[in-house]
Length: 79
Length: 221
Image 1 (cartoon, rainbow over the protein chains, first blue to last red):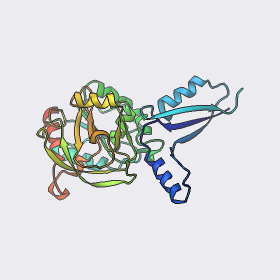
Image 2 (image 1 turned 180 degrees about the vertical axis):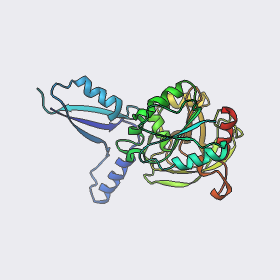
Image 3 (image 1 turned 60 degrees about the vertical axis):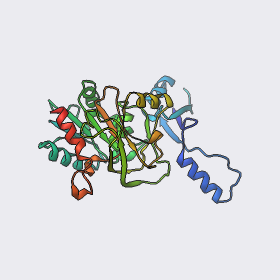
Image 4 (image 1 turned 90 degrees about the vertical axis):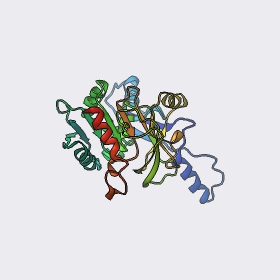
């Protein structure tokens, strides 16, 4: 099975990379962009039967820094 | 003083830190590889050097914080052994949960590399007894991810408990409240973005960093 983990900065945490991307998009003429937040996507290939709790533990122990980041898990295939 | 410097793949200030320790304490530190699981017996000071451990993969310091030697460092810190993390070492300490908060990308997005003026906010710690309270010093920084952030309650607690060791006297990287270095609650773990080992002798431009190691030697030895 596969799972995707989306890691995003918590609301209110300054995102300088998002700001730079926003600025660059505006420079390309995309004036309709109101805000940009940059995050990470991590794809996991997992043994069948891996539990949600296991994936969440991976996120808390390593994949996300929960001081500044939130995470969301999306399972792509279920048994 | 029997010191140890932890070496991660991608550390690049480990030798500078070792030179500083040897110059000031008269004894070369043990260089301990990240895959080791134990520190040399009797280690009474641990340095985590600057650099780009694991190429800053995932987040600065994230991989190094989970390496096997960091369990031994955490155990030693819990026993009261002084631990100093400089630059990437500070990032490793926050990622390992030995210090609160996180070090994010500099607010200006640029790598910042220059001597910066700092104020010594706490001159009573194991690491800062060589300075006067409120003294201004100049120590170089060289980092891309030095923007210290924590929630307001944590920042208030750090300030209230005298755990802000150093504060920038000019805008450097967007750090909350200008924080350049913090102590843990027991006072034996210091993380700082500026590099005291790069301000050790007149040839470096100034020797303001030297007193950190001298103060440490006096309190530990």
